Image (cartoon, rainbow, N blue to C red):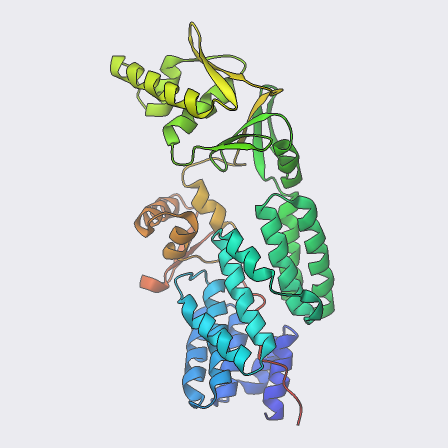
Length: 406
């Protein structure tokens, strides 16, 4: 490998894409194309980066399987940064196997981390934990250790284990400082800020207040009966009843929980559950049926008693009943929550992450765009949505394996 390629690779490893481009910007050989692609990705020019990496993969000869595999992994990371979750995962796994077979452990590990980060992003926590357990980060270089700990923290946050998340983020911060990559430092700081930001809104008889993640964790270990509007469940300590697939029942449970210890009139329950402006006899009959179903499914946690004016909850073994809601509730809140990470998402990726059809997500995005809350760029399959401002650069992109100076 010539000295300019080596110097450019080291500049990229240090987070200096402009310095790398100064060395190889005018070269069109395969290694230079690959490094230019990574540099453009770090600068946020993802479409140009993808094109350069594909050209590099074609420019490498059929015998240069390791170099071609590295280009595939780099393209996969660009797809992840662009939130193109429809990018074929089997290509990434094939490239990882090739790199591992030829002794490129660093990039094979990086490819596996990409798979884990994708699983974490779309909520496949069990898969992410299983793959992560294969690694011992102590033997990795600082940048890889930082990525490992960021994933550990991400899983802990999803699992509501704030202490474990803080410890992982502290380790990630130390590793990022040792790696001396500014973009990696910024990513760790951004992840750490999540722990101190409002995570949920508590609605209780005494009023409403915002909760941090550690406060949500403490609430869930208390004896309170919690109607969780974030995950559409009703819980107390270790007992959880999911109503995610029963939206009418959850709406009724939430309305009753918000009013507790008072009751809720039948007309109000009909209006909230069935969106009827006026309750007629058919609505009241349907309400009796749905209340019966709710009473049966919540039997381990609370009773649902009829009163002269309507219905009220009668908790069993709970000090109080509270509602845990999203910090800001509005139409298409789940879509906005994913776009809040500052990255550019495709509609197909949002659909995969949300468990909704792509057409449903597109209708939500159209409404949000009309309201000025999101913006799009690109056309066709390259179209992406995000919340302002536009992203400046991607982080932790694949770099070539350490290059010896011969």
